Length: 623
Image (cartoon, rainbow, N blue to C red; front, side, top):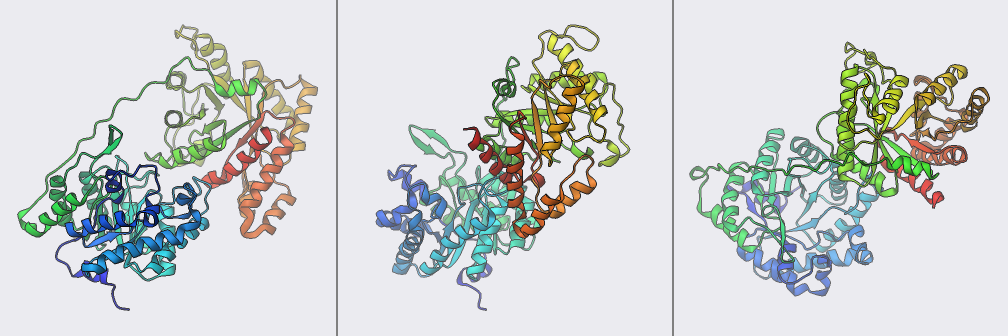
């Protein structure tokens, strides 16, 4: 197969090809309001779009992008234009083609495809198959219009960019440039580093690995070098923003001027970029200066020494007087939904925040942050609690394990948790370290969970530490404890439950329950032996993902029993088993609702999108 015109130019040029700059910035500068649908201008104001294409070509661009960045079904739906995907995209290509055909035969036309503007599973509700279908719809129209290549740009999610690449590859053998954007910490919004991004894009089949948008040229030069180390033989594209934007007198302004971009055009060339250009804030003047720099400065006469320094403002400290919102909801009888999330293994928290954001949007009442589940090394959960509560309008519950903590550390950690705003704590023993990442680590502890409940409720919440000394202001912890509703020894579990109640437990979380009637029967046994259960119980619900998942839980996880009829349903469901698992979970919750205060969802395999379906079903009944 003959190499495309674009790739021939890339591979046979001694200097990187030069792309265009921002379409949206120039349109905004021409008076188009930022909340208008820029893509629709292909139909309503084609002359303006064509004029901007011509300005970029005359400035020296060899590759121009169609005005179709947001011309997908999801984004156009925000403007009531989702039925015009094909029309807007074809019009965008035809506009660019007319400008090029007039006098600029060597200019390549790139079909511009931006992100869908929705979150994909497992951090959102849109499934990967739906995403690929939306990309295919837009890309098919760009092909019909006659583009020379595709630029899939400003992507933040590796799942999404992969679906876009696969959609383009299924429909055409045209070249694909796939480009991601990064936050100020050199990670994507979901926490992936440059090396992983480059490797994923390369393996998905893109012809060029791209970086665009982000915070400016200095950052993208740094990321380009990291990506080239990961994929030494790859082709790379760099199209930065003109610095970090700010709003001045109603206008979005960018600080980096054309001369600065001219310098960095040379730096990108020396760092191995095959295509360079500009993103938000760049104009034809930026492109012209880059063209002049590339044409008039040889590589041997230039080396870049620019650097940037980031300054972060201090974060506010949460007020220690805040009361538990979960306590307030349970007190008035609201059926509460708690969802468990595990802390990350490393420093990246973006995916966790994205998942928590989805859960908060659909109405989760509280996010439970586990403490090194299965004794695997993870970020400390109270740090994750602070991050979630700082970023999102949802409360957290801190899982607080006694394992590995002596009295000094245990009390110090409790004070730290309260100082950062945590009000809900779930007291557990913690999984034994023998089963985890560090089996030789100690399991020593000074207090069992029942003793810790007593310390918090009768000590800290009264302003006293374990020795009876004053700690100043009392804490206001709302304390949860574990409960097994299907215990192998009901008498022993009843005795333990009574001790936790006497020591002051405020609420209970249970293991996953798949036989609600048996669970209810245990509570009746407790009432017969002691007294009526007066504290709220959030019953564990773990959505089953498939028959193998169910078999594993049933056979290998102590305390979980899954009836044959549920496992048979999953087996019959086949590939649709995850959806069947959602239906089973919703059915279980309806059986639990009459006698429980809420549910405690434990999403398997971080499938927060499936948990979101369950929460929506629960909340629709509540309303």
